[in-house]
Image 1 (cartoon, helix red, strand yellow):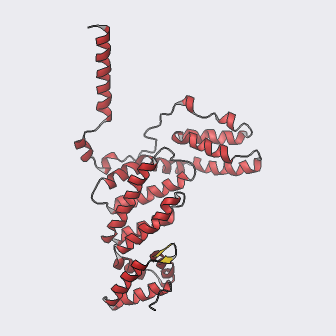
Image 2 (cartoon, rainbow, N blue to C red):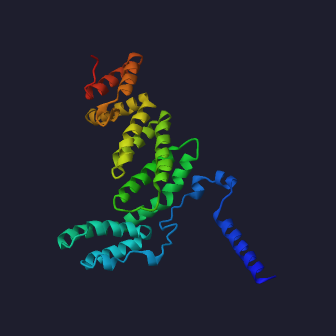
Image 3 (tube, rainbow, N blue to C red):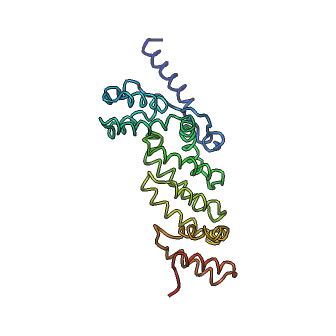
Length: 289
């Protein structure tokens, strides 16, 4: 066998071997369950960064040794986000020691074991969970609860320049938004889904576009189960009902479609719900003219 022929043969064998370990067949993908792909390990699944491409912390922050020390520790904890962390603090750091002291305290908060564990729990599990939710016809309550927990952490951490590599913009729309849409739609089956959408709506703050969209998802979840929402309203003590009633508003403005749904229900329902709807709408000063 000539040298060129042998080289081509060797390359082919190595390529096939690599593919065998990295590519699943469509049948394998269809048979993959969330339990089989989710990982609860608290270490990064993939963390292979080119050390030569990492920014040099010492040269960027040569005016503050304390900031250099704490950032050096932090990028070791979060190697996938080293570039975004350094870039963020390079933009906001100051030559004023008192200002940098605030930044140092903020960064130190990322070094606690509990925060690191939360990070890797989300890092390893959020994306597989969303793939499972969007790839199925249904979303279970357990999946919905885990999604709200993980995505709430994701939003918090993104405000600290973390998870910069976890999801592309396209994946955020295709996986995260679609997961939320599916949870809101499934609220027709159980009020737990309404509660989870309301919880996520309260938690999202760093992703401004999603924070605005969450108001629509909230209204959609209530429209899909208006009686269920009334039961949730009645389950609260009188002092908590006014605050809860704001969930029927969109940015504090009453939603006409939802109000009409409740007025129609009041005209054709038992006394219990008629009274509940009257109280609900009165909290928002919505009365018949």
